Image (cartoon, rainbow, N blue to C red):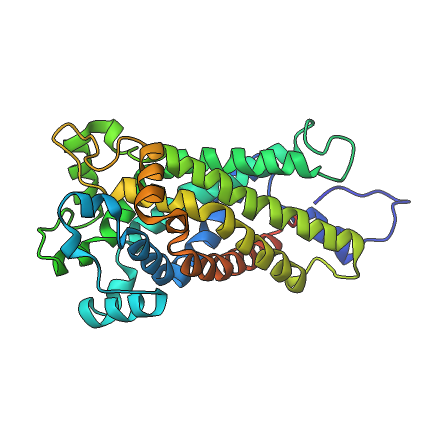
Length: 331
């Protein structure tokens, strides 16, 4: 506690609360840990919707039909029937298949993106002498933070996608590709080397940049707009409204890149680790639009949005509350 002398104003609980903050020597580490914890909670709560979305995005893949596997098109149609089909054919717990690497991913991804965005926002070139972070800077900051976080987390995302598709492969009579997180990493390394762990990283990073332009930028902008222009306080109501807006914008911007990312990551590979179905994210985009139409880029949009909305809500409410409890200023 700061030393006080005669003549200082009376000590108040508010003044005490301001001094009960985390040490200045490790604010970035503390925010990384807090955001990773909040993201892990949100990921586990909403993961079944992510699995459903992934199955929908692979379903009806034009490249598979060209490869002579049209007869293996999935039996599911729509979000509800896909989820029900997974439970009936694979079991209830299979809705969380791939949850472990998903949590690992968010520990890295959310930790890095949140710290990076705040660092950009609070830097001298961010707000500067003003308390307002301009919208265009918020867009650039959100996209940059998302891209950096996703690049580092891309290997865990690759493992997550492949594990999510194992149940479908078994139903189609195909041999399993992976038997767990460790086996998945070893298999990918043995086939493609270190570079193989970053298969699909380009559309992955593109998606993350778009999603975070929707998530971080929208949440930050809406929250501070409400605080400046309405009677709302910095509380759960304000956080909820901001997170609902961020989830909708993030889903709308990120779904096309998410479809391409999922297909590139899930495609079979040759002995050199090269994709068999798609040469690049651009090739995947062209094949999807030509073979299935433009709306194929929005396959899984409903579960994506239905997942991002509660994900954003759970994450931001948890994150803001944890920050308040441990004495870190509001986001």
